[in-house]
Amino acid sequence: MDLPGYDFANILLAGPCNLRCPYCIGRQLDPALNCNVLDRFPLPNLERFAGLLRRHGVRQIVLTGSNTDPQLYRHEARLLDWLRRHVPGARISLHTNGQLALRNMDVLNRYDRVSLSLPAFDAGTYEKMTGSRRVPDLAAIVRAARVPLKISCLVNEHNAPCLGEFLERCHVLGLRRLVLRRLYGETRRWELPAGLRLVGHYRQNPVYDYRGMEVTYWDFGRSSSTSLNLFSDGTISGEYLLVGRGVSDSARPALRPGGEGGATMPGSRLGCSRGGSAGGMPAGLVKL
Image (tube, rainbow, N blue to C red; front, side, top):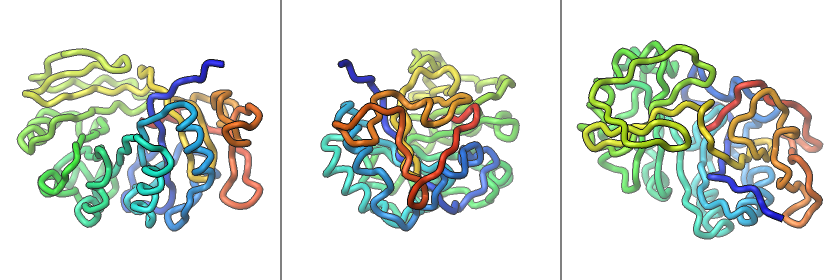
């Protein structure tokens, strides 16, 4: 039987966060998925998830959060070591808001690459989009980082008028890759800055060159990406974009709660406590 392929895997941590982003994906999730696991190791269903990654040949793993930042996870380094042992050859990425990047630089540099979410350099704009005026010191992070660093910038009405200045500052700091992300379901069209030259497409999304810096304009609804996802309650899902379906109904048939050799079932959930809980994803849930 041919196994479905996945481009990458997400490990979505949950718990209290150090920002209050109005568009946080965790607000769209069934609360049962957002179990606080910041002080828990191993994560629920982690061994089963690793078995699926090996079985499907997934070699790109992203450590991210549904409603928190992964660098708040108290076992971050321990989880990295565990993944290196149990998914040999995998490239592991960190998706972070950067608030703890300098403090936890030793751990950050143990990843293969890092994506840092930064919507603005201006403190006022940053506050509107994150609930905080503590803008990460990107220049210091770039100097200290020893792994490839990409900037991920959500675009809305607050920062769209200043995208040109934002791109130029990232270029001056020496960044080589940047992603401009459209909010899922957004119908407004933002004018892209001048100086962008179209050089190709990735997963149906346009890729531009800006003075040697790669800039991708990412639309979740257009993307053809596929991912295998572990939520903090132990739920395993095989959909990159879940639209109006519950986790159990949307997960690909290859997910096996009985282990790699168990009976084929649509999905697996352990729950925050013994026995788990049922629940579905609302329309429009996405994760990059």
